[in-house]
Amino acid sequence: MELKGIIPAMLTPLTEDQKVNEPVVRQLTNRLIESGVHGIFILGTNGEFHLLSTEEKLAMARIVIEEVKGRVPVIVGTGGGTTEEVIELSRQMEQLGADAVSIITPFFIAPSQEELIVHYTRIAESTKLPIVLYNIPSRTGVNLEPETAAVLAKLPNIVGIKDSSGNFANIENYIKATQGEAFTVFAGTDSLILKTLLAGGVGAVAATANMLPETVVSIYNHWQNGNIEEAQKAQEALQPLRDTFALGTLPSVLKKAVELSGIPVGPPKSPVSVVSGEALKKVQAMVDSYQSR
Image (cartoon, rainbow, N blue to C red; front, side):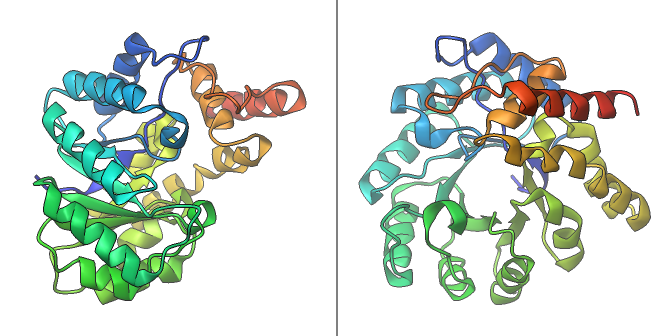
């Protein structure tokens, strides 16, 4: 199983009473696969993993894995605060049939690079699944350094990293530091998809693909066909959506945009509130601008 291309960072559809909405999870899963994505990434930051209980995470994973039916790889976020809980959740996802796990750095405590190496090594030894590291320092308070990635890349089942730092130099340094290893680098910041591909990365884990999957997939397809100008146009086409993200707490704006685009993904997990008022008008105008293209 090769992990590459455009892998949506899938939202977690919820009912009005905050439960995982199974029919809509299935609907969104199929919508993404039919648009040509190369994998599905669940329980990441936009999937609200940090607000879901273990039971909710297992429910989400079971439904997605069942619905995908092996059509594309399913990568499941199993990160957490302690090494033990990550090992336990990864084991449960392995039993459910996940193809790979993605593991965010521990958060709040800002571990040292040495502690990160021990953390990830213990997890890698506990599962047969491929592991994609996940770096998002603005949320976790720690940056997984390129030298650390180079050490971890030597472990047979640590196969790549999703970098959501927003710092392109970080992506370049990961690529450089892990050259010669069976290790791939994904953009986790949707404005950097094409730049990452041109620098030697293999794709993106992209939240914007929840609303604009065909557009995001076309960046990769145009790049693969050597049509960089068209890839650049598709890359720029994501910006109006990205510009609205600041109008609410993550992922409330994206959930509303996807809902206004026709898939009723429901509210964000409380305490995040639904987009309303002036912000809602701006999100509606943005969605309308795409639909009139």
